[in-house]
Structures are given as C-alpha cells and as structure tokens.
Image (cartoon, rainbow, N blue to C red; front, side, top):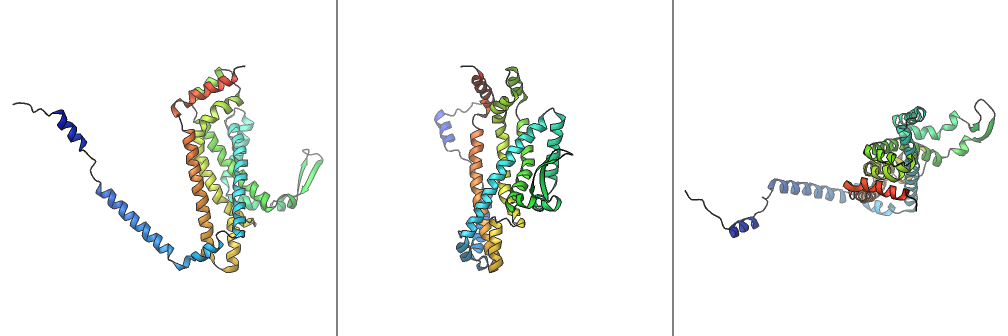
Length: 303
C-alpha cells in the first residue's frame, strides 16, 4: 500500500481556505438582544409619561447645574479627605504598634458597620448631644470652645459624614493593595537601607496602585451616588435640586429622569478615566517591580 503524498502547494491552499465555522447560535442571540434593546428604547423614547420635553427644558436649568456642581464638589472633597485618612489608617493597621493598630481597627469597624445615612443625620444633629465643641485639657480647664450649630452646617455635616465613611472603606482597599506587593520587594528595600516612608513612596505604593485603582474607581462612582443622601439634611445637591422642582410642579418622573441622566453621564466619564488609569499602571507589569526598586535606589545614591 503506497502512501499518498500531498504537495506543499495543496497544503498551503487548504490552509488559506480555512475559516472559523459560523456560530449561528451566537449570531441569533445577538439579533434577539439587539431587537429587545431597540424595542425597549423605542418604547421609552415615545412614552409621553416620561415627559421628555420637560426633561429637555430642565436639564441645563440654573438650579439643576448648581446642584450638580455641589454634587461634584462634595465628591471631590470627600474622596480626597477620605483617601488621605484611609492611607493613614491602612498604614496604622499594618504597623506593629498595638495602639495604632487597635485605634485604626476601631475606626474602620464603626464607620463600616453603621449606615451612611445614619452617620449624616448624626453629624447634622450633633448639637443635640454636644451644644458646644471645645478643646480642653483632660479633666482640666477648657482652652477654647465653639457653638456646635455654628460649626456643623449642612455642608460640614455632609463633608464629615461622607469623608469619614469613605476613609473606612479606602483604608481596607489601600491595605489590600499594599499586601498584594511581593514581600521580596519590601525585603529588598530593607536590605538597601531605605527608610519605611521612602520605601512606601518609591517602591511599595507605586506597585500597589495596580490593585488599588480598580476598587478606588468603584468607590468614586459609589461616592457620586452616595452624595444623593445629603438631601435628607437639606444640602442642595443634584437630587435635592430636582426634588425642589418637582415639589412645586408635581412633575416627578421627568425631574427624576434629569437626575438619572446626569448621574449616568458622570459615571460614564469616570469609567473611561478609570480605564485609562488602569492601563497606565498595568504597563510593563512583569518588569515593573524590579525597575521600581532600581529607580528608587538610583535616587538614593548621592550625586
């Protein structure tokens, strides 16, 4: 029995004509999903009960834009303060000092274990418990004091509530990111005599950012939505501004759609920004750790 030989030209021709089989089930699923989505979009667009002309009229109204600016401002300030406090708490939680570790754990336990809405109401009504806020020597004379109602305005109550609650969550996010760094990197910084603070700034935190950025982006998006809770303490954010309008006009659904669309726009922009930052810190992941140590050591060398 003779063996058939196939010429190289025939083999190349067969490979050139090869193609993936058409996945009819996947294409059918796509068609069904797109048809359902198009039908839903058509129903929503032509449903007069949504009041789209009213949505268009109020979408960029002065009161709505003012509330939007308050929402964005609260988010930026609370996120900045919360991240800064969270970094300190994360480092304290990882320290060998029992006092710092215990205090940080107690802070995180309390602010993660109670609802944000309750915390906001508590801060807003702080004067009920403490009519005056004072700085004094323990069991000694009072050095200075203030009227609590003068200090705790809706703005300060909102910033305090959002920031401290965010700090508790950011502390655990940052701690998880720091723990994700290879222990060999920490040992390398110790071997070369780098101080703990410089090792954190130059080596550990840059590597931990790959694990910190994704959950931090989620927290930022959650913060945008959590600012809507400050409306219960008469803080004129986006939702409060919308409520003020529909309480006068009784156009509840159209005004809520104004808020929904603005929240979706903001979160979509943040999602895009988060994607760019994640790709930036993911560059050269394999050799990044060794390169960061070498770069830090070069900066340590005297000129």
